[in-house]
Amino acid sequence: MTSIDAEEWREHRPVVFGVAYRLLGTVADAEDVVQDTWLKAARADLAEVRDLRAWLVTVAARRSYDLLTSARARRESYVGPWLPAPLATGPDAAEPVLVDDSIGTTMLLALENLTPEERLATVLNGVFDVPYTEIGELIGKSAAATRQIASRARKRMAEVTTVHDEHSTVERRRILDAFKAAYEDGDLARLVALLHPDVVYTTDGGGKVNAARRIIHGADHVARTLLGVSVKLGDRYREAEFNGTANFYGFRGDALTSADAFTVDDEGRITGIYRVLNPDKLSHLA
Image (cartoon, rainbow, N blue to C red; front, side, top):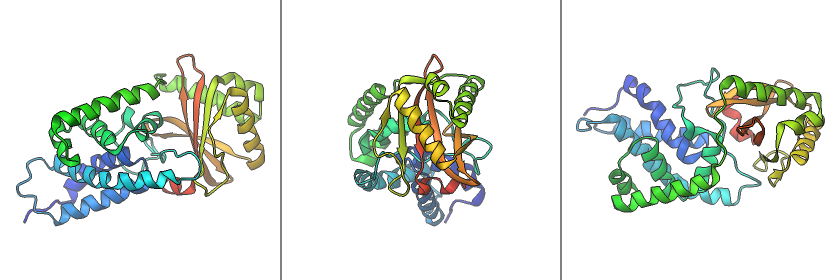
């Protein structure tokens, strides 16, 4: 019997995690899939497996697909807006992470609008180059039908991924540093000037901490809400890279209390602020 060894697993673990995180949107669920995949690989006879990476991707995708249905049911009863769990991708990342546009907050939120079949087809083919024939075997569809599912999903995602944050890292940090300064100084006028008139502010507390149950719209409303929270809680910001771009962690004293992701338009105005407050989604960052 030939099973996977530790060195092979270390090489392929990032892609296994990458599949699961993109499909499920949470680090905890993705780690569960990683563990399940490792156990299956350790027990399997892999002597006849010609492409170990492809085999592991398929195992992780099948397990993630099984979890998607129950995950969608849980999210229907989720308290307030749901946001993906932040994934450290910079110097704070504990392990290697596959980084591309598909782990950005905007893209993960767009994926969340898809059915499990659409999400699987989009991620596996678009990110990991899995043929439609193999994806079809996972969902019980023909290759042609699976291709149509992926095409329909791409069109749906294009309707909601209208923000293209293509600023250089230096420019993005300049914009966010200006936001941080205005936020921490409590300067309403400066803060409003940095926000797009139609900016959205989404908070995910999951019913575990106080958070807005609805998405807040508009520069003045968002700015006043942010400053009200800051004054009440005494938050401070620290720059951090997660989900592939520079963002901020929020602290109360030494305790990590939030992870704020931002989208920025072509004119340098902040169009979206996505604040994860649910401690279950921050515990892996502490």
